[in-house]
Image (cartoon, rainbow, N blue to C red):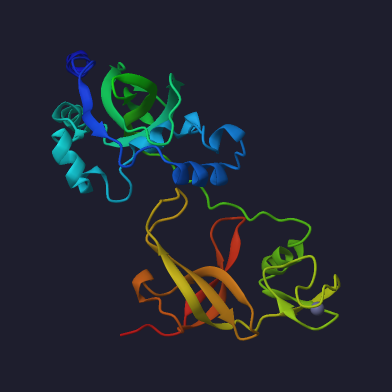
Length: 310
Ligand code: ZN
């Protein structure tokens, strides 16, 4: 069975995954400038009348942008349409059917053969270079699929981009990892000592009495490094919140609400709202502090909704 699938997958090697791709924009100075700013690359070769594009921008010129390549109606009409081939879709579908429904990018590799300059119009094709035999990894068992994009200016090859993914069946029965532990340091140790005693301590500047949270080594209002604490009464309201759907972190079960709670003392703290479904959390909702034990070691201050909307 496995050998038969391996042979069927091997048959896709050498077939095209994308044909007749056309760069969304010609190579251009503004995108080069933004890239260099983002990367902090001040190389002299990337500006001025003889500028070249940073070689590592190779893939940038092949990207469709948020709208995707489908939005380039004028260009697709001119090139007869670019996009993923049926062969590549079939290969991915075959892997899905074999239970390899998860995907992770593992590595990529680029070769630069000719500098790209503002004004260059690029085209690209992608070939399925190899499909591995079935491999067992920590993530699960599956197949490495390597594609190679050839980027051209006219007939000339400007560079290649190899991209490898692992299509795999996730390993089952993984025990749920514990919640991440708080990072306790010199500046916030007092806060966590309070939590261990089921007390939510707010820092107070002894210079100007300004309250602050999260804990900091000095006062933002007056610069004074000295402080004491006041214990929060536990009353607050939801100042703002988000509902986490993605990405899923293994220790958590999405969806769940993460809220910024405004305490009656005036400071705000990021926490979870419990006692109410995630989609019933609302701005302004009154909440009350409780200390929740997540496991033998971890206790965290969370906030229980005071009333549940009918
Ligand atoms: Zn102060």
